[in-house]
Image (tube, rainbow, N blue to C red; front, top):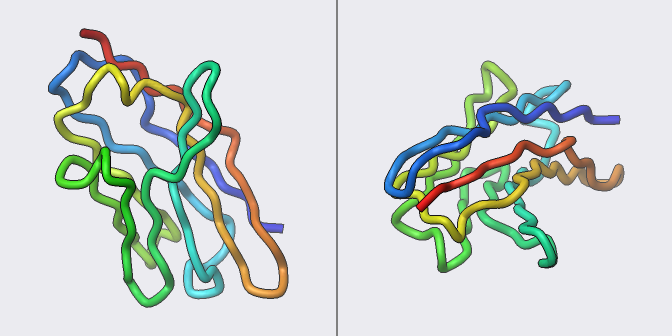
Length: 116
């Protein structure tokens, strides 16, 4: 069982920045893929960005050039740096980990609210 704890959400004005953190209960070297997802009210959960064990990253088009996913292996933590935030980025952000042969795990979510 991989436990994921997100933090860093909050209320920010449009154009501002936030950094989300996702701390994993075990080494990132044992996790194949970690990602950030978000779910806005009335909408389906969508992938925002993910990072693979080899370092490859992937972003949804709407956040490219604004968001950056990164990892600190020494701290077992993945980050999502969010710049130039827009009201449409408002959502609950979830961290997800995929471990080969073991399945997927989710954090409890952190609220991000961007005011116009």
